[in-house]
Image (cartoon, rainbow, N blue to C red; front, side, top):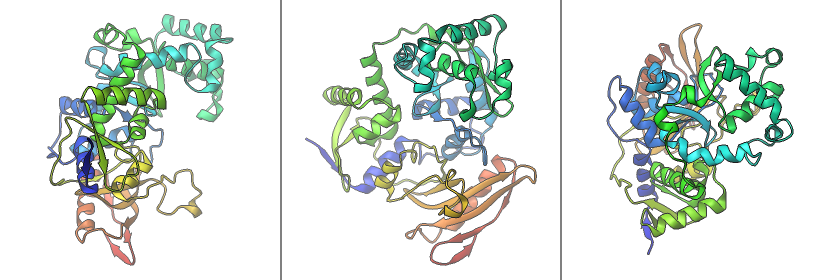
Length: 395
């Protein structure tokens, strides 16, 4: 028998599951950051740095200002201290090392030329010797970037990758190399997993693919709290059939509870440990790639908030701006702010603010406070902007 939830209940469950509504603390430490990433299951990485790299923002949204070097240490620090690794999950992601065994089936499929970008699959077959020669060079010389190879120096941008960079990325997909660190303009430095990841991680047994996919679906269900099958599938980008089988098994085991949600056209699944708060007290600016909003259809279903990132939209055709962050207040998305870090002038530029029609009267005050927190976190001065709804108001 399915439980029926109101739209408001579903919103609060989703927010609590994703780490919102808990008290923020000044200067959260390494262990608290690590626990939050474990709760989310991953932090999506993106190359855009107009404000701050996307993987830093979800932790700020939930925990408040923190020392970003602590996250760098978790992701790219010394081997024994490393708690995160890079791989393809939702998209390019930082993931807890405990998830590494659960993604080895994807690495094995990439090694066989059955997964990963189609343009790279030739390195699993006819051009495998070329990729393995590059791997041998890394094995002998130590960590290398694509630009450390002669051919790599003449290319820039993913659309102009030369053969060496493509071979390196296939080696990465297939698990033969991983990211040792990042340099300069966030360039990936490749090295052997056994020289980068904790030995305890690499020594973990590899589960069979169906077991691993079921565990990934449970991770997604725990992170979302309440979700449709399509939501769960999207979290780690699983195939529909694999996800459907995993959901059925988790329902049979009592891990997922069937539910219906007011206004949702499709059945939902509630994680058995999901909290059901009566109220969410929070204010947060959200990265475009935060798991709360990365699935645009889910965002609209949960919040009635239509959100699209307009980075690749010509300036004259943008509705809200270049790098727009939704603003969460309580359990609603009530505004959006187009933000930019002017690092030379040391200013956080608020280029525009748009309020939702039902935004409460205290939205601008709450947003102003959150922008001040963000500016201090980024060591910038807060530069004000104009907020628009039906009229205008200065923030």
